[in-house]
Length: 129
Image 1 (cartoon, rainbow, N blue to C red):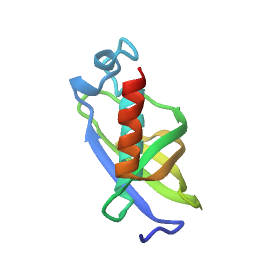
Image 2 (cartoon, rainbow, N blue to C red; image 1 turned 30 degrees about the horizontal axis):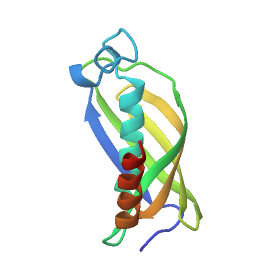
Image 3 (cartoon, rainbow, N blue to C red; image 1 turned 45 degrees about the vertical axis):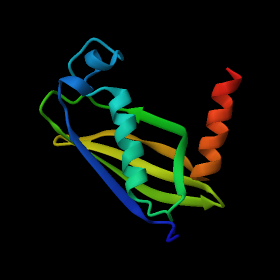
């Protein structure tokens, strides 16, 4: 596993009908939805990681601000930089930009997990419901 503070990742998208606030139920306008921005932030963090086979990461916390609206057809780019490593806990600084400037900022926390035990635990949880 090659993890170090400063590692970076990116993710990008285009604002389209399917990722607007109106389509995602987070508002009534045809602008880039906050849930879509959150997903892009997480994707950027995931894209920074190269974990060994059998490991993955899961998002556990977000503290973000969506500071500007982005219209249909615009390009959106998210960046994530790993700023803290505490055993399996990873903390990222995340930023999102459209062509006009910054639209989002925050911190995102992920945990490294072992895939098989994690999925087994999830399956057992479903059986309890």
